[in-house]
Length: 469
Image (cartoon, rainbow, N blue to C red; front, top):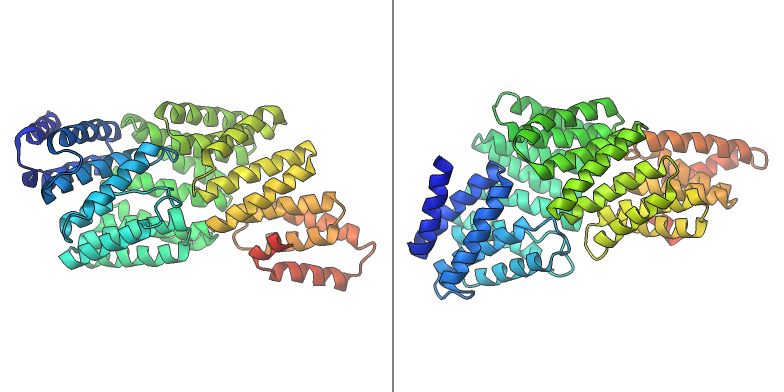
């Protein structure tokens, strides 16, 4: 009832109150809906708000308060559509919002609007987005807003992970944010920054460090009654456990989130968890469960119109079908995913999709197509710095080398795969077994010293060198 009264008061204000008295309530309302994760209500109320402010103030308001209000509503609507990575409306709204901020003086209000802007994967279209977030950070600093400054560090860091794929800079920025939160005792803010810091370490294969950080966060949050923070923590911890090969723990971690997410009606996060659980079931070789979870995730993503999630679910569903040799059913799923991601800067998704197509065509016996997809995907993997994917593709390229009779080249690649810290346990074990088989064959024509030299050469190569060959 109280929420309905707040909504009614807000709508009345949009119709009658002056613009300068609406900006702060808009920020408060936005924070409320974000932190309570009432996604569908947020979409409805702010979409209606955008229509009302445009009708009342026009597309180019004269006053800075009017500009601020319209820019804010457009930024929120652009963010609502963030996950639809090919959405022209979202891109246009972000551009229009940013353009309006040019007429707003530096300060807190401008910082908040810039903070709301989310350019997603539009790296090719908005090269100035990095400057937007720097400006946001500096605006908070100039206004003396430490909490806002910490938030801006986090936003900038997420941009570095999401668009620039620079996990080391992102880690530095998350540490800056964590330092500020720690300084004034914001446990939730500190936990969030450390959670994200843990993810940067996971991304580059520092799995043990990532797990140590996330367990520190877990100890903090278990003392609080904040179910949403626990949701984000378990999501990150689950991903780390997967790459450490702790599949049972990963499943249990994801499952702990499900009752709360279902109760809250969080369809997007439910789909995300179905997708994650399905992928773990695939790794555990329970392909029936893997397919079932992937299909459930895909159904929800399609209903939500979430193309990014749809693409990932298509990949996971394809994996479960390939595992039982249903190649003809898997191929169009991977191709649809590739169509979704092509043209975006979601290089990790592009790497994953190309990797899956490379594996599919290898299993079908089409080595030429397999090599093309693996090599293209390898390049995207390097762009994204998602080293686990890169190393899995290097293993795939080694299989191709061996199939074409180049055992020495295969041995070089396998030596790097099994020696790299970011290689996941399943890939490591498969590569190690294959390497031993190749060494046994090579021993018939090559002495042990020569074999050792080949292995050492492979281990010492930079990951980027393989594409130049």
